Length: 335
Ligand code: UT7
Image (cartoon, rainbow, N blue to C red; front, top):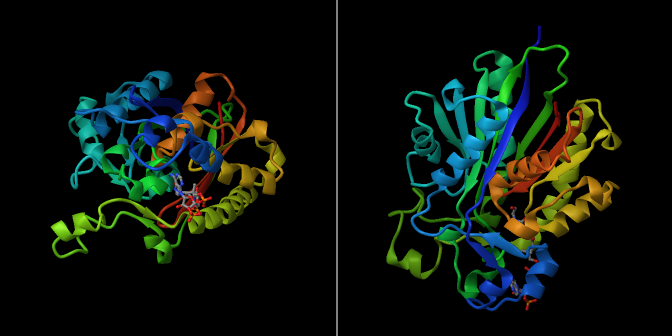
């Protein structure tokens, strides 16, 4: 019998601290109107000291475990996707493992930026289908706010990003009567555009990794060629979505919910229009949370499951685009 993997639980956590567009306009030369118009974002959440990424990840993970009806001790593996790790090393997943009260469960971080969650899902799916592990916790977790430039120089990037964590439990499904399944996942990358959206420092490619000059040149803050990223996102997301659906022998019309990475509402509207997807099939929460990178898709999934919009039997398609460049899609049956 071919082993199948399905999602059995979801959870999310965002910091309580709400930062509105108006709050940012007090710090830098921007406006609520510009941010809403270009991105759809109204507010986002930022951690307050001493809050750490693994705290958000822990709450999201506990909620996912609870909704799956299992304990942390039942987990065989933890994968945590992030581009904003708690420390240079070890990965955030190690801090999370400890917070969950586990001492030997294997864990690792996966770095594929805004595509990190679906990349991690593909790894979890492969582990479960191979029979090596039965229960995998996959977390997307980001604390962007501690690494953003809140001066005018950083306004193009800073207004877009927020902090948060989302988690799912991926489990083996041995029940032939249970349709729940991760049907297909596709992951892609194009490293020649690595410097179109990146944080260069501190990095081991620099000698040394951090200097006063690097700080003065602000090379430790994210840099993005926004229009270039936008153009590629609106090409790659429809492309990979169609590829994944075709691999699963499904059509766009079969899909009940399209969960797109929440980078920019305009990108997602553009993708939906291109593919003639009705807007009501494309939920969004970017207006409340901004771009939470690897956390954005699992956060959106959790909200839609808990609010009862995603129901057993529904077909869910995910798609992302992010730094790297990286882009992905997954299609799954909810049960
Ligand atoms: O997670 C995946 C990675 N990220 C993305 O997918 C983001 C992709 N890119 C985008 O979403 C859009 O390119 C942005 C929302 C980042 C920017 O929108 P845009 O329409 O492409 O604007 P732009 O970068 O071409 O800038 C237009 C103007 C510029 O001024 P001038 O040169 O026309 O005078 C910018 O300096 O807007 C200015 N600007 C701002 N103005 C007010 C840039 N950032 C801001 C700001 N507030 N925060």
